[in-house]
Length: 373
Image (cartoon, rainbow, N blue to C red):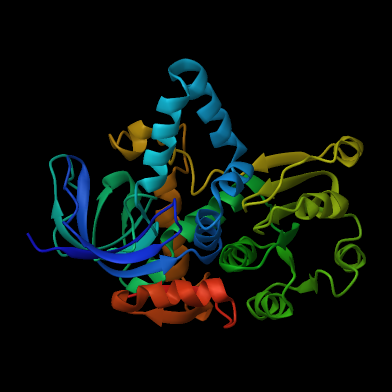
C-alpha cells in the first residue's frame, strides 16, 4: 500500500501539515481518483486557517452555533464528557480542499457511469481534498468535456456555487444585476450572468478586481471605500437592480445593507458568500425585498442520502442538483462562456503546497486562483 501526500490542518493549533497517509478507502458507490489539479478556495480556506489560529475563546466567539451544541451536551452528559468531545473534535486533523480534477483509477460496486482512465472533476469537503488520491461519491463526480483541461475542471465546485447563486437570482434576459465581492466566486458569477444576457455591475474593495470584472464583460463597477458606490450604482440602474448577488467574505453587515439600498422594489438578494445576515427590516419592508441564502453548489450537498448513499433526486422535481450544476458549469467553460484560465495567478506542486498557504496568510503577494498540482 503506497502512501499518498495530503494537506491537513490541526484545528486546535492551526498548524498546517503536508503528510503521507494511506490511500483512501474505496467504498460502495464511490470513485477512486488520481488527482491532477486541485483548486484552493482562497476565501473559504483562508477563513478556516485564521479561525484555527484563534484561541479557544476566539473560536467560541466566532462559532456560537457550536457553543450551543456544547452547552446542550453539557446539560445531557456533563461538563467532563462535553470537554472531551470538544477536545477530540479540535484534535482531529481536517483535510483541506473541496474542488479538484483527475483520472479515474478505480470504481466500486454501484458505479456504472465512470470507467478507469476517464477524466473527471469532483467536489465535496472531506473527500475532494488536496491529496494525490481521493475517493469521492459518484453524485459529486462528473465527467470533464474534451476541450476542458484539468486546471479548468478543478474549478468545478466554485463554478457550481456561483451557478446555484445565479439560479436563485432567477435573472431574465436584460436584467440589471450587481455582484458584490469580486474574488474567485464573484468573477465566475459575473461571467455566468453575462452568458445569461444580463447587464452586470461589479462592486469590490479592490480596484484591480473591479477592473478584472469589467475586462471580463461587466459593463461597469465601483470600488467600495474609494467612491460613492450607491451613487454609481444608481447611475447604472436608476430604478434599482433586479437582483444583487453577494459573493463577499466578511463579518460585516455592510454588503447586505448595501444590497438593500441598490436593489429595486421587490428585487432579489442572494447571499452566496460568508457575510453577516442581520436584516435591516425597515428597508426590506419598504421595498418588499426577497432574500435567499445560496446552498453551496445545489440541492443534495447536505443530504447524506445524496452524498453518501448516492440516491439522486428525481429530475422532474429537482432539475438542478449539485451534480447537475457541476456538469453544466463545465459545459459553460467548454463553450467558452466562462474563462477560468484568466483567474489563475499561482501554481504549486503538492510538495510545495504549504508555501501556497504561507503566501495566502501573509497577504503580501497578489493572488486569486491558486492551483495545487
